[in-house]
Image 1 (cartoon, chains in turn green, red):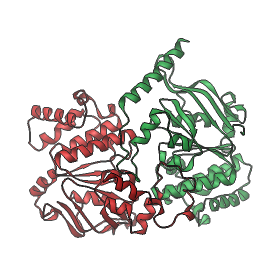
Image 2: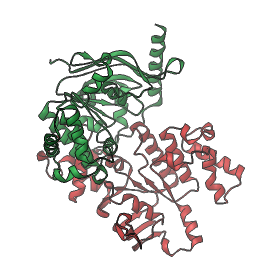
Image 3: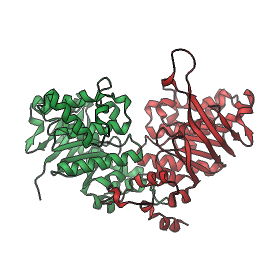
Length: 294
Length: 288
């Protein structure tokens, strides 16, 4: 057993303060080992994006971490001064976002967006930054890197933009990449290419990935281990083949039963029972009350 | 029967427009054939920009075809007078992808649902209200939801309202454009169940436009695969999904990640021909 690269324990996040506080995350425990792809799967409002944001330190200003620790390479990120935390981003921790077109700055050429990270964080000078940028673009299999460097995001397709974002994410050879729904906005054949690319680069560099998604199919194909989140709580986690193949938690079972199946048109599409989600929410709220009394 | 026969649509390409004069026409879809029978669901799949939505809109007579025609129960939509077209449009309704922007944010649900009756002189205001309440019930919502505004409903509930509004005037055909794309799987399952129920109750003919092949596979009877504005393959769902003949269809099917663990799925060299769908025939046999 290798040591965890990232260990999130008992992480609680609230939005707002005092009486109006709403709990978003309730005691989340999550571990990522070096070089592993950890899926985090759930429906909207479950808190999966918030976990990624808490790890990267990009929580909205209204959100407060109310409990827990985030140990990254044995350092509690929550105790780091904001400046040091920011310096980790782009070097040791990187992000890939859902909308490639909005992740890039629309008024800057691709060249400047890539070299920005290289010169600011990674100590490249302008000349060598350009060379490395070209190398990065070839690494993500962009055929005409010279031309793409001169282009603006709107001149590129969604898949191309996502390749550029991935190139930027891998530029600093980070130990961890948080990928939040990186293929959701893409067509299915492009999704295939991007998943392949992420897997390829991940295997080559040994980077660990937290792969946040709503799509169990994608999880099954790319993740080594997976955590299922609902109402800000991790309901089930384990090796992907176990969680998808033999789900233990009723919610995971319901989620799988609700997914339409290309291979089994007669199966799938069973709505998740309302009583199940209601009781899960009740549990979550009950645990909040317990905590506030304690 | 609702039919598109050899339909081509061209729209002005504004990016190529010179300062003066008209923008040149750009062909969006070419020579598309499509038939929807009442009680059947026809899926249109393809990637973004393949012309799926354009063909959907042309079925409602929103675009004038450059070639070919759209026939509703044997009549060419383009040949109808304004009044006849108005009548014809009661028979074809549309449901949109973005339920948020397709409902007026400043009006209550009950008023939104009463509108179709009033606007077409089918009912008085108070009568329309009752009909709207009945519609709410048909799509599985409570009367209390009628007093809310669109932003007070969840995405799935709003999409039900979109469906309720579309079926208000008892249309024969519905064009549904990516209506479950923004929904979670659990909500998606509910909305699809509702569509199935309505189709059975009213023998609705439906055109279901979607990029999600798994949803199309479970809901539709027939499917049309589009690429670059052309139909590359069409036929019964069972046939197209089990025995795809076109390379592009094969590629699409291969790229769909099934929730089944497969370590070397991303390894393309492993896959040749229709390997990815070998599990299908047995599943279909089991269904029969």
